[in-house]
Image 1 (cartoon, chains in turn orange, red):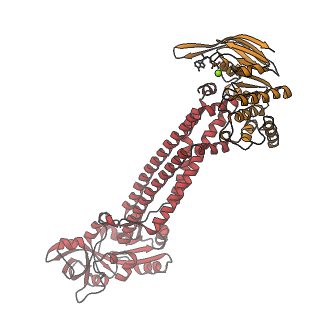
Image 2 (tube, chains in turn green, brown; image 1 turned 30 degrees about the vertical axis):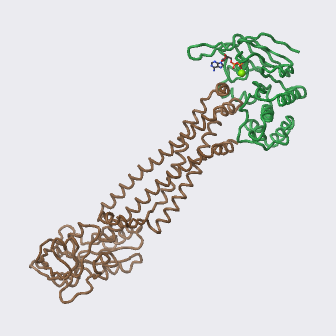
Length: 225
Length: 404
Ligand SMILES: Nc1ncnc2c1ncn2[C@@H]1O[C@H](COP(=O)(O)OP(=O)(O)O)[C@@H](O)[C@H]1O
Ligand SMILES: [Mg+2]
């Protein structure tokens, strides 16, 4: 479970202060399939970064499970992200010199999992995202949609508590977008994987099970279908 | 895995990596080329000195060195000669009778040391015989006893081959003695100071004129130069009353040249390493800045900073591990080749000869230098990638991922 209380984030951009988030309270439970939506500049990325421990709030607290992530040291926080959170970004997700298989394996190597487990899980995940025949391809040999599917597989490889995805479909055509959503939904339904993703694409919003709308750094609405 | 990624990362920008690799290996090559050529020159200078006038070891009577008394001949001459001749490491041995003398021709006068030598023996020790105009090393002469003078002295005395020279000195009994010689050939070595004060005559001629039937100096060359000092110690142990010196003691200035060389080499090594450091800092900094997003992503998904740091360090170690051996092997091959066949600088031969050098240089390099260079290259590249690696650690993942 993720709990974010009274999150404020103010950027000091030179002389101007930007209030990116102004008091956000949100709770995300296991098994959710939640979209954070809102126009560009509304604070979606900032919120996801703070929930994911990539950025610290100016005010407020984030608890993941029993952990107040503000209390972790820099190194502990990196380890915490490795073991508890899966990330999918809009782009630059993969290590360009490694194959799909090696990219998926990477986090498990950081976690020092043994080889048998790594192989089994990599094969399973690449199959789950429909890329079992692309395992030896490098990112630049794959389409944008395929790369994002590898990123989803990579995010799941470390067995995280939940997956945060910041505009994962922003660079994809509609067919690849639908395909990626299918895969994420199936993983959510069948394996109870928690997804929190931001988007401003209506077709993606339509398929979310919970939609949190932010505007000007505040929650405008929060609907569970 | 970190290794693997680091190694693969090098080849992402092939042109840049190869440029750095080539720059590093060229730097090593250039440095080693200069060092080995300089060593070759210094060795040549040293060898020239040893072969023309110093030899490896000289034996004198202890009192002779202090007072240059004509009567202070080497008392154990026979014993020393037989010992040296029996020694397996002996290359040549020559006995010399040295008398300071006043010499004059119709055209001029000068002071000179007459060296009474046995030409056959002297040939084994020095190469004066090879520095003659006509190749007559006191071997061919008619009635008058022969003398060899240097080109320098010949000019001073206005003498030529066949000129008659008169030498006057005080003999063993304190009586004036005079010898009349005929110039049979003219020599010139690379040391003009030596040339000016030395002339050669036959040992038996000088003994007859001076009534000194002995010698003042025994010059020895040995086969294995590394064993000069141990040979000397052996001699001292057997003949403790004699004064026995090696070339290092006789001509210490040759050793000073070595010290200078060490300094020059250290300076060159520092320059090479600075160039190397600059290349690595530059390349790795570019590599880090270019990959900001990727590094930010790696930190975001859970790669800790220690691993990121080592990934960058390994990248530069790999670069230098490729460049180092390349440069060292190229240098080794070049030094072996030119060390055998020489670098022919005959177009500058006159200039070189005037400073005591020959026109063909044989570069040489001590194995220790290769080892030293290898260690320096690797440690310099590790040190110089620390700054770029620390830059990578300062990256804020949220920031790097945001900037499109
Ligand atoms: N590093 C930063 N410095 C200054 N302002 C920033 C920075 N990051 C984001 N912002 C501002 O914060 C607001 C929210 O940005 P963001 O979270 O990226 O919104 P979204 O992801 O919904 O487009 C925007 O006005 C943006 O310009
Ligand atoms: Mg955004």
